[in-house]
Image 1 (spheres, rainbow, N blue to C red):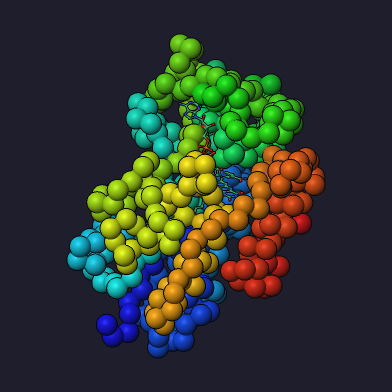
Image 2 (spheres, rainbow, N blue to C red):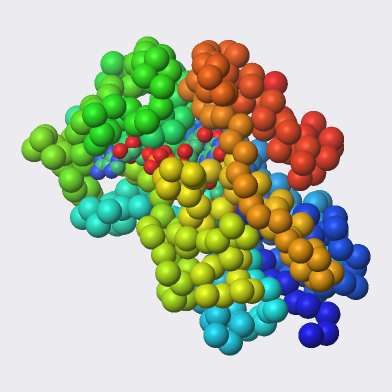
Length: 396
Ligand code: FAD
Ligand code: NAD
């Protein structure tokens, strides 16, 4: 092999951290590193619930790749991956360009899991990218303005959030915060606005600590969120949702936050998947493909009890860092390290100054959790872009 070609797909948490590690570890002539991403920016997915509700500008969650990639070491291609051909060791982009590789890193993130529920793909929104959240924010504002012209249509002021996992809960926290401002701006009586958070499981945030769940629900209920727990959404139509109980909620805004699956490009490439995620080995390799590595939401890893780790940014970052170092080792003929996740806890926001968290056995509530979350955001920004980026982006 001449200079090895390393091709990284996706500049999310997993792909970007792999690239930054390679950029740090290798000299410019040791490997040909190419990063392909749909946009020329990285987005901070963990903040997307804020611009979706309109409590922060979408730009705030964007980080220009130009500012963090070293052009002497990384060739950046702005393009959309259409297909991976592992047998040929090539990747095809939507513009027809074909890229070849010696090592491939797949970090294409996730897509909403709709469980085959009728109408969701067509009629529901989801919090998945900068463009998607801009659309949600503008749609919400449009609903308020439409109601002012058709005051009988209270369905314009009814908002449905499907799923009370962390995404649904964090979005409800922001929407609850935005509500008073929207009502003032559009002269709408707050009593007319309804926000439903609908959860199939017998509890919100299934599997999380009951005391923290109760705290989160109390905070959100005070902001006007109405929970319907143990109530699966069965169908979504242009006019709202139908619940398994037979109840229909009329709404023009359904935000589906009921789980994710791996990017369908991975399954289409012929890799063996579970919910679109490749069950990778301890070196993050796809089974049967020594030179294909998968990180982030496209990868599936298990804990010692055989339970899958949830798809999180926290794990995607760690995978990217380990993989970047391992690829550098492989290029130099050194041995790679096994990937072992180190869970640092969970922190979730409930809107301005409010949050919940669990770090080890310690439970965090309210402003303490919110501050810890900001500190964790700050660490991430520092990691990818140094002090400059951290100072530019962090909100105190
Ligand atoms: P992503 O970060 O989604 O990145 C995928 C990248 O691939 C993107 O840049 C995308 O543009 C690009 N891409 C996709 N398709 C193509 C294509 N066809 N061609 C080219 N490029 C493509 N996790 C936590 O640990 N903590 C949190 O606090 C947290 N908060 C969250 C809040 C919200 C609102 C959401 C939605 C998720 C949150 N998560 C959190 C989960 C976390 O964001 C994901 O697990 C994480 O983003 C996965 O990283 P990734 O690198 O796999 O993919
Ligand atoms: P999730 O899978 O964690 O939660 C989805 C929820 O939707 C579940 O509670 C599920 O029971 C419910 N649901 C499924 N089908 C339903 C139906 N038909 N009707 C009503 N409810 C239904 O998904 P998520 O919240 O999008 O999170 C995705 C990943 O991102 C998770 O791993 C999560 O931990 C992570 N995340 C983390 C944070 C954080 O740490 N602050 C924030 C957001 C997301």
